Length: 500
Image (tube, rainbow, N blue to C red; front, side, top):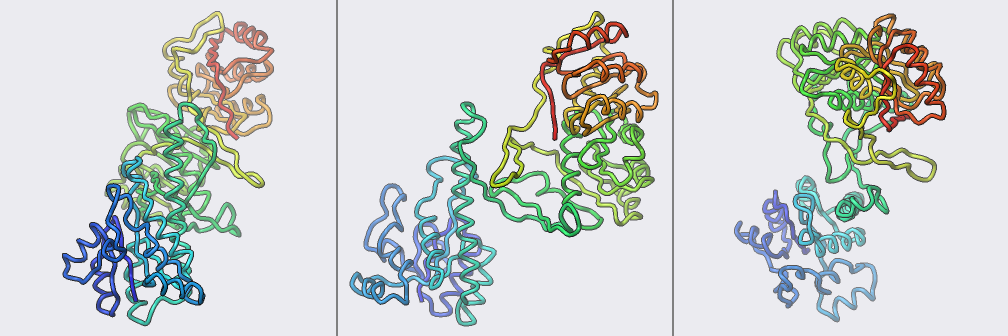
């Protein structure tokens, strides 16, 4: 039996080579892999000696030779193939162990592997007769199988499937690199080549009768990959979905001061910023205590005992923070069903995708483009510095709430949020009802323009003294006139933030 070993990641390769040699296998290898095996005093034949062809083009051409690929691809049950092997003096290769140049470590032309993927694909194609191994984690199982008589058909098939997934992901990363080089010309790639590995099985999907899992795009990592769940039940689909919304929003709002959010069904039902993290949380919860029941809490600061005690007064599904101190852990332990996560800040994705029948909808991620320097005051009265702070806060929150949305805020605390309504007036009424008088002197943010003045009238009735909205309605003049009548300061941003 013959094995070809050619790996970039040499983790465990000498142990596998020793195991194969001990069972009478002949070993072929090249370059650094051959040197590592020889250094372990394991007999190995260099590929160049096996093929009779020298390494060429600065190591670009090593294994691209009929002696190698004929040995891998030959169908052992095909008489014509067997005759060709005999005619050309080609030795069959029964096991191919290859992993590829780490393209993601430093993307560039010289890390685009050619010989490796070619051998992997050849062996995977011929998996009925040849084993292929691309993952060092599989070495032990392969060595055990060899010791017990050889790789069975089911194992070869599993390894072949893994091999094709490996090369597919590798090629997808290369295509993505080319797209990123041209990203300034077109933020949306001409084609999408997604390769993702199942990273986490979930308790269930959106509902208990659905199956759910988290997948990681091959070669990429996100905050979920380094997050630590300290306690609580397994995460469900909605736990992850809502936690993602909470963690993205709390860091989107974070500008060096403690920030807290409470999320329910991917929408914030409470948001606040304060110099004291405990106050930030209590203010966020106070926005809508009813909706906070069963919600997700995210805080940008380490959670201490007092904060944990406040959170535990309310049924909470998930808590996320950069760290949880010992006192807080002890307090959370009294609520064993609460899922408590420590996590790093999110890095942010470039594209958003949603499934539709037969394909995907893809868009660039919504980010707030306009800032205070580009905002335009359209009313007789300009907002004060304090009002501008509240407007900026309310605008940032509104950009993360499902449309139609109205956000009422005061002193960097959301006091009323109306989300996901089919008309803006109802969204405003919901926000005002939840504010219950607390919006007096505060700010109102609308994620899109007011098509009629009735949406603004709700903010006026709630006592808001400043409003921020994109502008652009054919009735802007009517809305501006209504604001002037009420003595309200209104700012146009020139951008909207629909979120469905």
